[in-house]
Amino acid sequence: MVKNIVFDMGGVLVNYSGMPVCRHFIENEEDCRRVHTGVFVSPEWVLLDMGVITDEQALAQMQNRLPQRLHEKAALCMRDWHLYNMQPIEKMGTLLRELKDRGLGIYLCSNAGVRLTEIYRDVLPAADCFDGILFSAEVKCIKPQREMYQHLFKRFSLKPEECFFIDDLQLNIEGARACGMDGYCFADQNIEKLRAALACCI
Image (tube, rainbow, N blue to C red; front, top):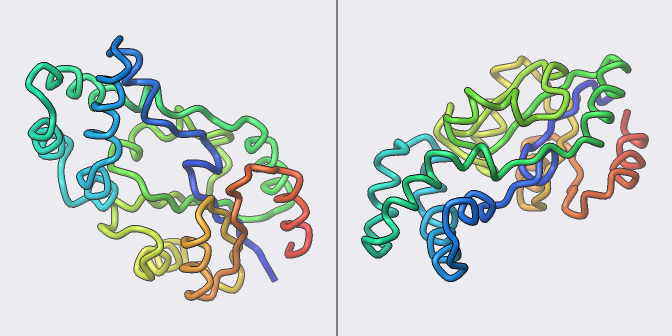
């Protein structure tokens, strides 16, 4: 019997794109794309999610791959990305409250850097509904690694078979199932299909 619903963040509870902050600070579209790739589509971004590198260390390595004239723009994008790149999916807030009202535990398990531990309440819909939140940088591993799910279960004293996981990447759902937690891939962001899937398990 499912007693807890575990949510991913990006693509599930918030829409995420690396471009808005780049376009805020950079007028030239080619330069925008270059900074976007150099910052947000970089190996350092994964290392930030894993919590094994600081923002300062990541930025220095990102800037090394960019021309000098874009170094300041890259620094501005790194400084303020969380203000521009995430927009709450408001309909998910309604669903969260419905699930909470039914007595289900509500948890978050997301690949995200340490900055999110400080600002998640500003971007998550229905942030007050969560019984527990785990960001990958806190435990220095990422989904779909088995260790990430095990940290979730141990930290919040959850039984995998009593949890249902919602993520936008099938690979992460498969990782959860390998640990005993069933799930649903929300890649299409179709909330009615998600509601139907939840109705079958709770």
